[in-house]
Length: 270
Image (cartoon, rainbow, N blue to C red; front, top):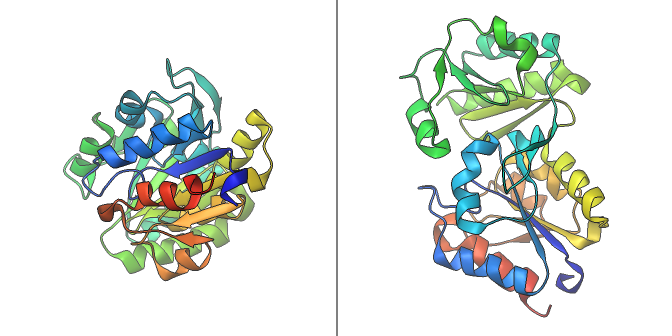
């Protein structure tokens, strides 16, 4: 299968980088080896595109960057927006209602900014450190509902996040895409803004068939892209649910799982 792979699409947090957001030398070397074999490399994440600038600076990507799980695609060189998908206003409002009902805290992202109700709220500091820019504080998201590219439900009550995901998927149905990007984050985006859509976008752009695309990730929202690719790889720390839906399983993000996957499943024999 590795002989036919022309593009690898990788999730970022918990996949390409460690839990401390480190891009290891071995991961960089694996990506350089892909380039030497003329295999394209692309990234997608729930992060906003500007939150992946540090990754791009290290890797000098040549493929579009898919932020917000595919809600916004930008050029890697200058950040020019190639495509964006905004949530319908009623879907955005319903999302906020579901998040509140389940006891989660809501964050709202527009293509340019990130809004939170409390700058000292759960995970805000870590997210700021991850994406490298500050949130704006807003007690009322109403003025931004027409610009919402992603809404996140946040809680350390992981069962509540899972329950919120199930309710959002059932209630929003075809009006939004809802999936956990971390055990404590529920990401809600435009119905076509998901990682399956990222695969479709890249396949069309580079005129590739599914069997020519490999994907790698660790969370439930990565399963959507697994289903659209010929080779899918789950990280070692992924849940059994995620692993069952992947073609292969590699080591964890703390044990060079990304680099090992590239070496063992894509470069070997290619």
